[in-house]
Length: 251
Image (cartoon, rainbow, N blue to C red; front, side, top):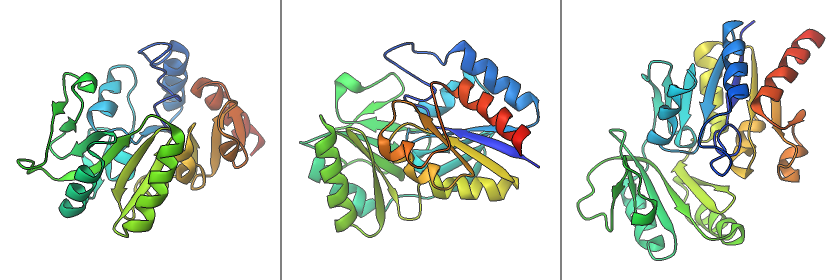
């Protein structure tokens, strides 16, 4: 029996406002979990650079990136990838360029952003797509409030049939149709022949993940929608792993 745990990153493993590092307790719990022969992976809407750098602290067995548009194994080899239609990328960019911070999850491990205040060292500033020739796994839109993000998520999903938009509090992650955290976990489960898959997340864009795992876990302060569909409500990934050990004993 092969068990695995997939974890969201932001406000699950990584709390920027508290500490720009994964906690020692979570790192130790993950390592101990893997030492028992179980798999641990990251499942995020973040682009490549925002995920793989965490390997300095932990060593995931798989990476689900850009909400499932890109899946990598432990050695960062591609398990699955799908790109967003170029024409739709352009349409979204110019539709929202004046209303939201735009993040393009591009091929070749590149990330582009439209606001210089948010550009990190490994990201590129972009003001238009005239010279953009890369393929893109997805695009993220960051607004100022959750209400706008929800309204625009619904509008995008009603307008475009070739893509899917997922609200993440005040932002939206947009990927090709057929990609989501949940669909990515189905692919990972099949690829590794996992028999028992657990998942932990904290926000609306984790719904597809939590409804497609055997053991769904969220946080005690997560939205009620998530709490209603999860088996455990915890304070940390370390606590989630402790609950998995108890679950295994009961099973």
